[in-house]
Image 1 (cartoon, helix red, strand yellow):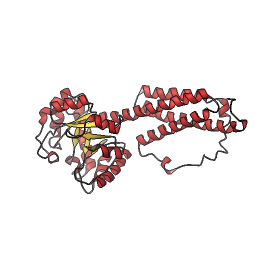
Image 2 (spheres, rainbow, N blue to C red; image 1 turned 45 degrees about the vertical axis):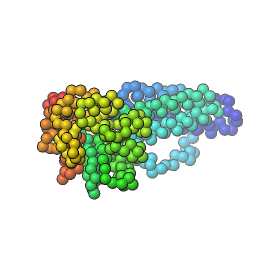
Image 3 (tube, rainbow, N blue to C red; image 1 turned 180 degrees about the vertical axis):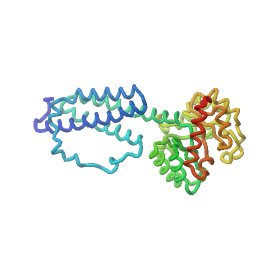
Image 4 (tube, rainbow, N blue to C red; image 1 turned 90 degrees about the horizontal axis):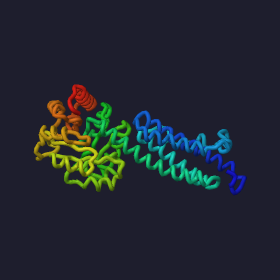
Length: 352
């Protein structure tokens, strides 16, 4: 560490290195704890641990000796966005960015003192980029797999309050569906609903509109049979996002899975005004999906409290609902009732 161009800048550079070693290691520890205790993902937790230990090797006593917390003018600096997190994804994203920024600082200032350390931090930054992609992708897909009740919205004056009430009942998956509003209104509603879902830790999916999903940073998009292909949606949204697809028969199901859908809708099980003029697929298709689907799937179409049990008995692992929740007197209670039914059937041993 003696090859600095001027001895006068050495203490300042070491203070910068010291602070950013701390930032990077602290950020990695926060991410590691989520990978370990929430996701139970050994490989990602171990990657965080390995990077922390590598940084610790470079964080030498001489660098630590330059620390001067008392005279550090930055200890009181803050920003309102740092004082709270709206959800786990924002928490993880903030700390991933923190690690990436710290590694970039270590890379640049390391060039003044240790090219080997600088090069190592550069390579580690790319490892963190890969970790970010894997972590956010895994978290979304894990939550998708565990979600068993899927709310598909319909336009109404009190849309957002009703969605929030449903989220308060334990809902973890919401799709914004609006065939009526203009794009300006759709964008504003989608932005607000996306934020609302993330505040409650729920996934937010946009129906049909890949451009809208991209604009509001939704967790994914749901495609119909006449929409753009799954491959095009992935090109636009990136590999981290969820892409689902509607299917109405075994052939469409097989094709959607072959194309790489993360999940599928199976229905309409019953005739519904949401899909006016479309014949019901019936419980036979639900039974077929229960035997042959290899991705998460949700039975959809005219499902409510009067026929929910029949759909579950036919083998549906999850239900997608519109009117049964959106038009309920109390969406919170409606969601809680549906989730209780799903849990009861699951515990009774029906294939889920």
